[in-house]
Amino acid sequence: MSRDRAERLLARATTGLPPRRAEWGAAMRAELAALDDPDARRRFARSAAAAAFAHGYGLRIAFALGTGVVVAALTLTASRMQLQAGEPGVLSVTVPVPAILLLTVGMVAARVARSFRFGVETGALALAASFVAVFAVVALEGLVWMDRHGVFVLDGDPPRHPAGSSDVVFDLFTTGMWLGHLIFWLPWLVIGAALGRARVRA
Image (cartoon, rainbow, N blue to C red; front, side):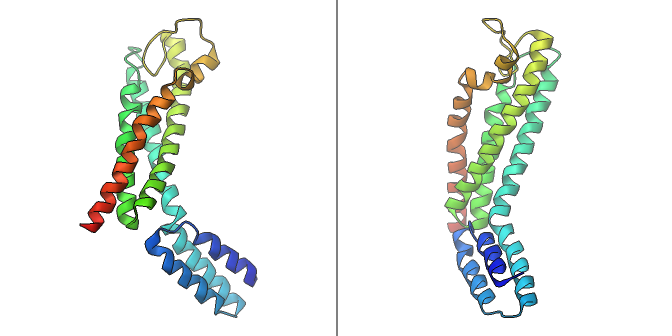
């Protein structure tokens, strides 16, 4: 690994660190600059980059993916538990459950990083993952519900007009429910980040 590659690796890895780790990142870059031996630079850059990633983007991604998986699993479980009856739909899961998870993620991330901003940014990634999870499960399960009972999976209501596959898959968007989900979710990640930061200061 050349000097330039080592510097680029460490620079990328220390980007996005929470404020309390920013000075550590600067110190690691300065220490790398003082090394001349290529092997030593390579080892140091990789070791420091791994540590930085775990406290920066790595932590954010882990929270986001974990949240997305939990939301998808719970939405799918709710759908399957109601499939035989074909009602009342999964809105009772897709609206409040991600909100609770986002509150928790924002609070834990802010507390771990001692940063409100880090909590909000991590919560925002978790929100995006939650949205993708809800859309994916609702789209796939919606086809099953429509085929089995002739109703939408979100609310268990039948279509007012003949509905094709695309209508079922994109029901979250055509009904405007996507906006309702986001509006309800957003405050919770901010509240969580604020609570996490407040607990650090207490």
